[in-house]
Each structure stands twice: as structure tokens, then as C-alpha cells.
Length: 419
Image (cartoon, rainbow, N blue to C red; front, side, top):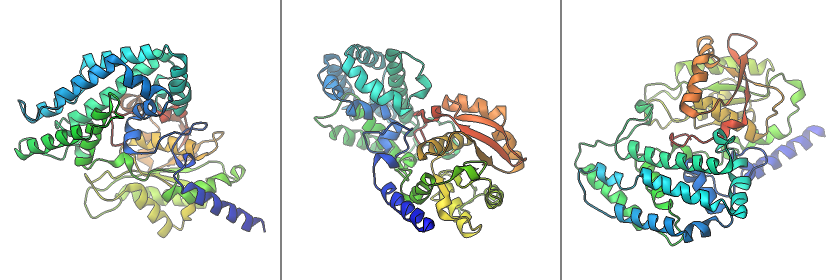
């Protein structure tokens, strides 16, 4: 009788998790984003909040300085020919230092209105966790830092995906065009004209530039950040439902975390080391160390592969190792070991895993030394600006204990493939 009741409850929760409601979004406890989980809102959350926070669209739209800035920027972008092409076409859409300073000044001025400040900062920005690396700053500096990050993210997206500058990992994250091919000038011109033609009455000063940057990600086929959203629904719905009814007292760890190791050949769906890591994790799961496995990895290796590491690992854990499908959660966005950690921390916290005991990272014996070591800890800070959790030695040489920190929700938007 008890077993059938629990099954019914899991089925009900799974059905509700599949709905595009706040409960299925990847938000910290106590916050429900008032906007859809899209590419735009993942990469540029500040802009979504400025549209959603009561009073802010109206205040921004009627601000004379911001209205003039929007008109000046539209005039810059309206030029269909310039020199040296094609880079000058992209430059017209970037935020200049003067633009950035003017916007920050106006945002700080608008914060003098207490209702506006509360609507944006107290009800949106701070509880969302999206700006957690700046949480210690007073309100004016906090909003200023978030705006500078957003402007830098647009400029970085333009630099990499319009002008061909190298990203941090050019082998897997780079520009797909050839600047030397004359036809590329036509592509960039067409993109600019099309973006300018999409202007709307409801646009705020940042919307055209955001539209241009997102369009660049689309024409480069780099929309990875929008896939599998909302994350707690779809492929994760059954496991998310099971999390809610799990008796945590009978297992020493909340989950086993397994990071992908993508292949370099186009036919393989998982790398060799991925198979070894899955075998270790399946063995530990069978021994009862944790009630769930979280597999982490995006569409990474080889460059522009159609195969997703997390999806493929879940498939193999179920089909080859006998792990129940509702005990495996996917984290399908991470492209580097840093974001494996950060994204797993986000998923554990958003899905409601207990925080009074750690998860267990599982890997081969050499990689686990790197994951638990100082080199990766420093790289986390250098590349993401945050340390997404606390690390401690695991019970054997294949594991490390990991306790997530809510600072992991901070959005590093200069990495638009996985912010």
C-alpha cells in the first residue's frame, strides 16, 4: 500500500515538473524567475529583470539620457557600409566606454527611487543568485557591476562570434566563419540590417544590442545555453520528482557526480575515460553510497558534435549498467571541468537535494586528483569568478566530497555557451 502511494506521488510530481512553471526552472530556493528560461535570459539575466521589475520599463523608457543614447546607437548601427569591413559592421553594435559609463550613471540615479530599488534589487537581483559574486557590494555598486558585466558580455559575444577573436577555448567554442571570405561581409551586413529591422516600440535601450548578440550565437550555431530548458523538467522530470520523496537518512551521500570526457572522433558518443568513470559510478551506486547519479557534460568534443555527453552517459548507465532512469539526472550544459562543478552545484540546489551532507564526485584515479586539487580551485576563480562549493577527500581514490555553495548561481555571461 505504501509503495503504491509513493509511486502515485512520484507520478504526480513528475507530471507537474514537466510543466513550464517556476518549479522546473534552475533557481535557488526562495526565488522564482518571472520570465521564461531562454537563451536571452540565461545569458543576460539583468536585461530580463529590467523588463520584469515593476516600474523599470517605464522609468528606462522615459529617461531622456537613455532615450538619446538609444537613438545615437541606432544611428551608428544603421550604416550598411563602412571601412574596414566586415569588422566595422560589428563595431557599431558594441558598447563604448562612454556608453557604459552613461548607463551606469542613469541606473544609479534611478535607484534613488526606493520602490524601483526594491523591485529590482530586493525582489529580483539578489534573491536570483545570478549576481552572487557581487553580493557584498552596496546596492548602487551591485547594480553597476551587474550592468558592466552585461555590457562586457555583449561586447565579448560580438568580438568572438562576429569578429572572430579567439574565445578561451577556441578548439571547441570558436567562430565558425572565415573572415577572409568576401561573402562573410554580406552575412554580417544582413544580420545587422535584419536586427535593426526588428526594433519594437517596447524596446529598452539595451534590447537591440542583446538581439544582435543573440543573433550572432544563432548564426554561429552556438545556442547551447538554451538547450534542455527548463532543466528540472523533460529528461529530469522523473528524477526530480523522486528527489522530493527520497529518504535521505539511509545513504551517506546525496548523489554521485560524473563528469563527461568527450571523444575526438565523430562516431563515438562518449570518450574512453567516460566509460571508465560510469563503471566506477555504477558500482558505487550499486553499493548504496547515494540514491542518485548526476551526469554532467554538454555538446563539446569533437567541435560542434551533435552528441550530448550527459544524455549519452545517462543512456549508457541505464542500458549497460542497470541504473534506474529515474535515479539519473542530466546536467547537459557544462563544457569544462570548472562548469561541471558549478552546474552540478546549481542543479543539486535547485532540485532540492539536502545540504547537510555532501555529494560524491566520481572519476578515474588521476582525474580526481586534479578535480580535488588547488589547480582547479584557482581556475574556478579565474574563469568563473566563484568557487562553486567545498571540496574534501572522498572515501577512496576515485572520489572527492563536494558540498555546493549558492554562489554557484552567479552568471558568467562572457561565456555565452554556458553562462
